[in-house]
Image 1 (tube, rainbow, N blue to C red):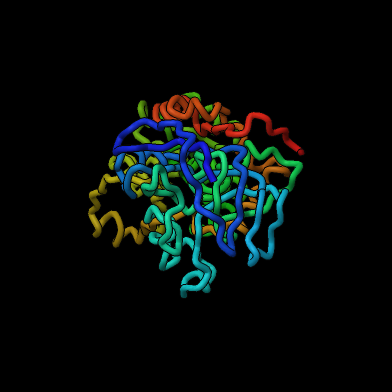
Image 2 (image 1 turned 90 degrees about the vertical axis):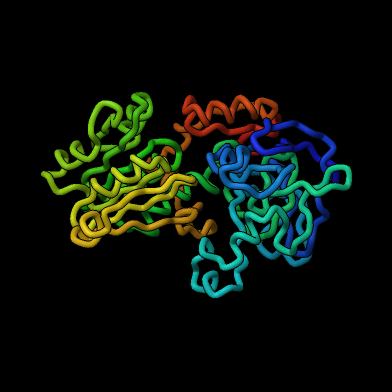
Length: 373
């Protein structure tokens, strides 16, 4: 089947719109999905510019939402017409998947970051040559084919254009708090970086009952939005030492929990130094930067912990519906971070994401889609 897709042909190259990309045939446990929209994530940019690399040419995108067109004969839980949000693929069979931790799937890299489908076949081709995929999804397309495990069914009365980023950015930030840090009511948390992931973590801290939810950034407009979304305090680290400011806000103790979404060396180090004794920092950015730690003073004596978290330790089929419930309750206003772009304007949308002009760009792939239909 021939589709339209945004293809990156070389490391650091722009997205190029092509209408001659061939989509793989469906297999027994596949869904064919008509794409309505897709968020743009910083992980897409990391792969585009080569900070992380799968191979080129490649079709990126991993925050897709759409409508099921066809299902394979072994598909049990979906039917044509279902509205879905797409996320990563966990094999379901390895020991970690069986423990209920698909983000730690032993086959995670092979299934999501190898450039091919879980069975090793090509997801896309152009003129007979393989085009790499991402997350067994590649949502920067008009139509894609995914495994049943990639999809999460959502209510048809919701706006699919808004929902795609729940599959990565929002579930990563919130899941890091809900599933990994698990802050106790009355505890304190600081979030470094108020992009989509950081704001999701911040809202999760508020929902969890943290009495101090501190947002740290260098962009005043983002800090203003963070306050609107539930931050108790904001710190502009361009003007203020964030470690000292956090200590001042917590009676000199520091915070019980911190989340770094920036991947910037100095900021990651500050997120650790801002911890109270016994506190934990979660680092969740895709970055090639490293941190320097005095393991005796920063970690051992202070009994602090640093944990890495992949995709918020989430189970998409559990966590995404939970976020939608919070959204309907007015507790998780993720839509306030989004801005819609036409699919053909993907390079501008990505540039606005990189510059910070737009927190969460969303590509509207089907401009004829009407919410609630």
